[in-house]
Length: 431
Ligand code: IMP
Image (tube, rainbow, N blue to C red; front, side, top):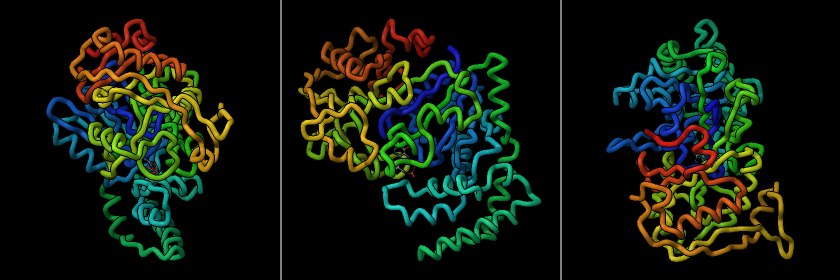
């Protein structure tokens, strides 16, 4: 099967967590490569629900190694809240988790500075932490663990944050001395799990182990390829997996994209197929479309094929997983956006400027609904004919095969398409 990247192809919340949890069984190591606790993977295992923000969902599989890669930013307080939750559920986090010594550390000053950003961010301090990384001021896990220098280095960074906060008339609400003490204590708890994860991953690959690279957020939130400036601050598309782990592109064998059967977005920014009326509200209600990190209602709309063609290209997807098909079960007709127009002009590229994307007029084709409960279907051939036609239509529009479909949060509510590339990757069943 080799090494695989799995990532979101819309604006996040595509249901990657469930897929990663299912796929994790087939891999030795599951590595995250970007983002921080702005992400939120919800995984349901029977009556247990886990919300993972920083730690790769592969941690839920006993014996698997979960890696927090160098491309991530870590709030140690958020990390240990998650570790404590997992440890309480009987998971051997100390044995399974490895944290990159090169990942950046998020401080309260980063959170405070986010007050000046008004693009609907998660307010976790992620953007300002990446700003410090690019500005060569940031402190990394290795710096946190260096007890001889950490206090002094943090004081220098905190003074910088203080100057900026005052300039923006933001009152810092944290004490440097208290933060130093808390972070130093957490550093000691973190120490046994810290590693040179690029070395660990490359050695493991050399020894024949298989790695699953788990994306957070999604391509349309990617700092370069997304709807800038309404994006996150990291590289959430396939290239980010290499930069954020230190594993070369030639060692990646497959790239799996995840998309909802419709589409959602949280926060500000253009959204051509947004459905603002009762139909959008019904998608939100049926799909429980509320942010798992912030609880914000997600904006809902119809499947956007031009957007998927774009993210399919940027990631060179091998196969597509369509999730939450069951949320469309009630509809008698389902609109799918097939093209973008501006006036008489048909667009064949994604506008680079967010104003440009706000101006496009989506053209829709309406497909017949199936108005049958798909959540209990257990084989591809038993899907209603209209549901199969819907998936075939998406596949033809996007130009990437639909190799898998999910119709509910449970592990067994997932169907692999017989004969698909997805199946050929060795993923015949989840057993
Ligand atoms: P930030 O990542 O907190 O800087 O937020 C930037 C944008 O990305 C905002 O529109 C957020 O709502 C969005 N965002 C960040 N993380 C996620 C996620 O996990 N799912 C969906 N949207 C996200």
